[in-house]
Amino acid sequence: MYQAKLAMNISNQFGLPLEEQISVLREVGFDGFFASWMPGSDIAALRRAADAWGMKFEFIHSNHLLMAHMWEQTEKTEEAVAQLISCVRDCGENGVDTMVAHTIIGFDKHTPTQLGLDNFGRVMREAEKCQVKLAFENLEGEEYLTAIMHHFRGHPLAGFCWDTGHEMCYNHGKDMLALYGDRLLCTHLNDNLGIQNFEGNIRWQDDLHLLPFDGIGDWHEMMQRLEKTGYQGTLTFELKIDSMPGRRENDLYRKMDIRDYFTQAYMRACRVAALKIRAAQG
Image (cartoon, rainbow, N blue to C red; front, side, top):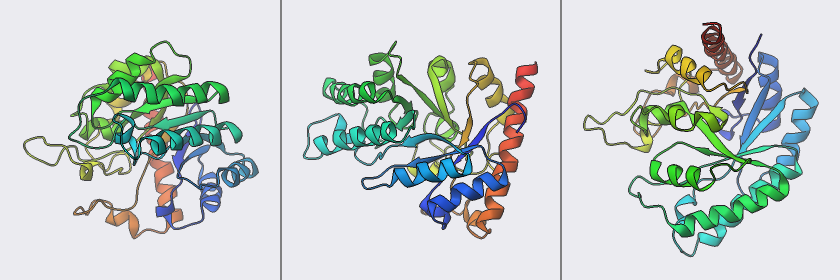
């Protein structure tokens, strides 16, 4: 799109081989993509597909399932650290300059530890060797993001990944760009319906990852805030077609042909980009 680069996630949920998804995203208009990492992921194959289709491999999203073990010594702690280091190496070996990482998983944990910061320091040392940037994402357990962003303040390879959906549900609508927008490296743009629970209790089922404009997000306001940060990078969208357990909101997407869904995602992405461009123009 004129004046805006657009990217979207590839995912096993979309029902096509990942390499084919890259080609379809290019065909409908996207400029790039990102992929999630698990042990055994064939990142080299995705790199080849990206090159074949002229697509920017924006970043790799590391596995988040063991993140709670980063902060306390358990039988899974070394595995958690090793997975992040392996993901960093896959980024470096395949010419992907950024890795996105969660800081925690779980809604009942609120106490960062020095052990956790030391463990992330081990990952950062590998990132320095590979010259890979680490973008830490806003989600539940804001204390952990705060601790990490403070610990790595001033580090040229440490920054922020802004997830708009997480901001609306996990962060109770707090302006996360006001806190970390000066260190913004990449985005996860998506919509949802905010916090479902009347008392304001957050749950992972609120994280819907709807197409923009299908939820309660004020995209005009969000793009104004994004423009104020000076961010000129790719607008990257993280979207899902599967509904959360006990929810129905994404069911309509599941009924669509995946090429039609990707086309609709591109159309919505263009609308979001237009709002950012207008914000830049005053």
